[in-house]
Image (tube, rainbow, N blue to C red; front, side, top):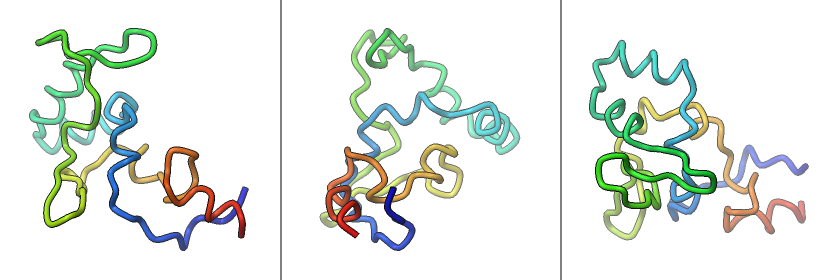
Length: 108
């Protein structure tokens, strides 16, 4: 595996559109509870894994991307960046085939 630690993020939002919200761990849930982040906990508890995607328990609609992803001035950004789940904090641009930078980092 190539070192991706110095790969700049394109802020394209692709990784945030890959069911990340369902991958919050127990530490994330405990932190959000301590922080009083009922907004995040409510969204997380609403997401139901149905085998190959998430559904909203409230609406029955497919959850296609992170509900905390926003878009301004040509870039995507995280509205909960300071307290985002570990799966998001640990993600390195270029480290996954879903990232547009993946092919570039593999050739290093």
